[in-house]
Length: 300
Image (cartoon, rainbow, N blue to C red; front, side):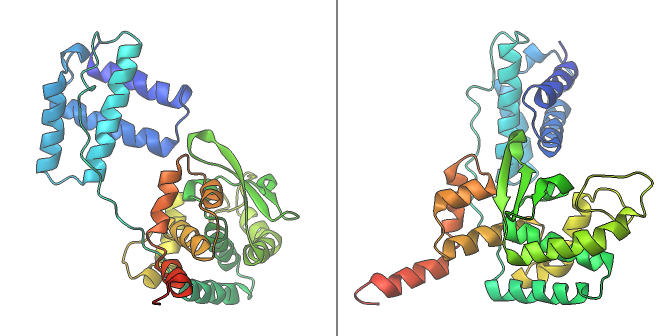
């Protein structure tokens, strides 16, 4: 079997069997396409450990980030593990492929006061009833109030929101469903948008949709529009030119921990499979550490 055919079969496996998210599948396909560009469309069994090491070495030489190299290593391992399991290769050449150690970068977060001011300002602008402002206020309040991923927010349908319990049901990574609470500011912004903003946007569409958040043409909003909104409203708060929706998720997690929330509760809210993923936020909660020091240390 040629590498190209094997890659296509593996991608179908990721979609149909493992049910990975479209973004993850795209990343794996891109990584394996890069591998094929290195080794050529040869017989899959001809790709050995040295070829894989050479591929990663060339990626290092062109300046790929360590996180990218680690992801590509994982993609190659998953691909050849699948190939060995299904009998497409006699031996898995990736078993001894070592991933470079990933550098830990602390996420940028906005302060509580700065974020509160920005959200209050947007809510004031939305008071005039402009559908776009109402939608934008609800999006930012829910991203921050529930700590959602952008893909989760874009996938929310009207029936997923429970105003009575102030919760939203989302589909996270690995098609795992969870129910996440949100606070009163997000509840007010959502109510205002659903009553006054969404009907006006929905009227612009040719066909009806169950999506909560709509684009300016009335269809389900896409991640790109949410990225643009966050870059416009939130980037100045964290001192960066390029900031995505994850900045609000990072901020939510950090502020929860600063406020005394249990780490496992934050893990459950964010939908992290591993507690280790959530623990990064303990490193950015400097205010909590300083407060604990002042409270407990005899020399504080």
